[in-house]
Amino acid sequence: MAERFAYYGIVGNLIMYLLEVLEYQVAAAAKIVNIWQGTTMICTLFGAFVADSYLGRFTTILISSFIYLLGLVLLVISTSLHLSIHHRAPLVLLALYIIAFGEGGHKPCVQTFAADQFDEDTSEEKKTKSSFFNWWCLGSVVGGTGGFAIVLFVQSYIGWAVGFAIPAAGMAVALALFLIGIRFYRRQGPLGSPFTRVAQVFVAAVRKRRLEGERFGICFENGDKGRLKLQNLARTNKFRFLDKAMILDGKDAPTTTRNPWRLCSLNQVEEVKLVLRLIPLWTTSFAFSVVQAQLSTFFTKQSSTMDRQIGQHFQLPPASLLICFGLVVAAFVVIYDRALVPLASKLTGHPSGITVLTRIGIGHLLSILAMIVAARIEGRRVRIAIENGLVDKPKAIVAMRIWWLLPQYLILGVADSFIIVGLQELFYDQMPEGLRSIGAAAYISAVGIGSFISSAIISVVQGISSRYGQKWLVDNLNHAHLDYFYWVIAGLCSLNLGIFVWIAKGFSYKKISDEDDDKKIKIESLDGA
Image (cartoon, rainbow, N blue to C red):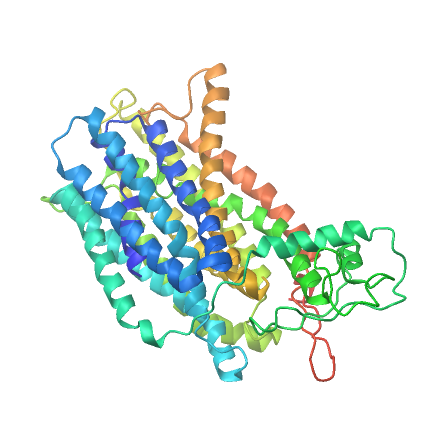
């Protein structure tokens, strides 16, 4: 929660800091925020790799937390000193990217480390863990929303330095509490490079590409059992060219030891298949991340042009509706877990109510609806500005209450509770056990890649629109065509939803082979949801 408290305390209002204090133009500020968020999430891949391969999750969390705290302290210092914009901007950006590096190690490991505290061999704990991701999301949202609400109003009415100091203090307290429980944690050590195991399967399959039949049988030996209790994966018919890697030939059969670059176990081959099956679904999550990127950029800029007055003496900060977004996510996670899942379970017979992929698909659909609503509302805002002669007055407040933006925040909040929790569960449950930190980083990095894509879309839209008249995204939103930009995103997300459904229909969930009688759990598919 503290990490979410700190992160959202920074990112939620960052674009206003760039616009008001560092005096960036709106398109440039939006791209800076997108690129920073993207870098932060991409760093999780590196952090997860280090955790799984060398340091273990606990040590990685510990080191990255200190780096994170260092970046927060530097951010406070850079905003406190009396510096010119020319000297302040590099320090702020340096602090932000140190935070990004710390986040990269912390975020993919802390959730997986928490899930590791459940024993999958105990039916009661396994059932409890099925709700863990919902409640983890709730805790993250509560921490993020609480942090954002407090920091937002402090930044707006007291000062930026004090506003950034609060997340730093929260992170320091959380780190101290984490260290207090150090003796009680269940830890897993590093398992060696997961990419080596993947590479071994491909190399072995290529080396035996001309091998026909299974005259000498296949390799069931699992060389990793001494380090980690692995699930016995059942053999599947997907990516059958990789099966060559586990087939014994005349050179393998007589030996008592195996060359891992020539012969792999069935488990190892099926682990690689699991990863390959998840990659297409991972790419379809980029579109939702593009929609999410608008929350902390153009949605906030829209708010700054609208009537935010409450009473005679109080005005809401532009980014304040993000609090409503967080509250919706938190509330809907509880409703989903306590009401919708039991109801859906009675109707479908599925223990989780609906399959993970169905949940993600609903999230994609709602994200499209959110962008359509955002485009319609922005079109209305511009018409009101034109009717009141405010087109050439960029700092004028349009006679339209900020609450008109509430529907797009609420719909996107519900979409988030469907798709993000779904992705968390999918990439934890369906990844090989030795790659679960990488799995957590995969869905997180999708958010980062989506931020980069959002920045690229801005550049493309600006380039194309400038050739045929005025740029769509200019500092004066009354002169801009932000609604056209939202329609473009809605169209791209609609195309992505079609691709997602096509991929999901052919997706097979992880199959476990029973060690006693070799019974296999039936593959679930989206068709059977």
